[in-house]
Image (cartoon, rainbow, N blue to C red; front, top):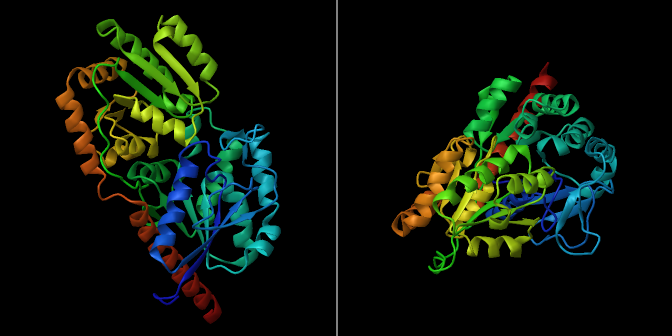
Length: 397
């Protein structure tokens, strides 16, 4: 493929704003924006189904008609419900629509798949067309489930990693995990960090109100909400005026409500459930610190969002995004005493909080979705060129 030729990309997605459950949909939206800004890129973004209110300004959206994926709430609000039904069945139903996807999508040069949810559909499309496949790994089954991995999902991930022509990892941590757990050679993996579009530095929250410390994410074992609550209980012993917000939904939410009661901090913790974009912006505007104590975090895009909103960040030192940050407070995810001390340090020392805010914005000043898109465009071109070379080698015998 000539270096100047435009590239038509067929992206197989699972969620897209406003219907998202976490960082995957946010990343897909940011990448499509970045690719559109580059020029020379045309992206067709396939979803299991469309709700009709997706933001398609930078991308052509196509429905597979699979009846799966992320759906709008029954009340019609532009928020997320959850994955529908039995998720593995949904994934396989999506893959069964490969011919329909091809009929609706038109011609393309490269397939871009995101995580295991889209991998069976992408592999089937590669089988039908012979087009190169780029697999974007935002998380693995080991990240999401720890020791309780689902063998069927693990098998899909393994097959997809073998099938892909190029693999994109969201961090060096993820690249290392793919090598250690899936035996993928490092030479087949490119690291492309997620991005953020920084606006003007926000005005710090006015002093005088009770300090607020926030957790935002899926309320699952992977994200470490129990460590947030246990650290909160420790911090409250030293600073009883602190208030905490645990924002998000997930299978551990009832257990976290119970834990807060057991720790005696139920009155000091607000559980918001799922927040839409407006709710997230309001949360950050009211917060003095953000905590991300993830057990396993391939990247952690929400930390970038907190930094963009001017909120000092405390995060697990093993999170992928920690590779980019020198001014966040890094802790072991299960060291609740260190997390509590970090909370107390930030709320007690306005100068420290300001250094963290300003320093973190400098850390991410060069990160953008367009920069991520430049890396992706290079990977697309390389995948296409390799596919042409392989076809020519086969032709020549």
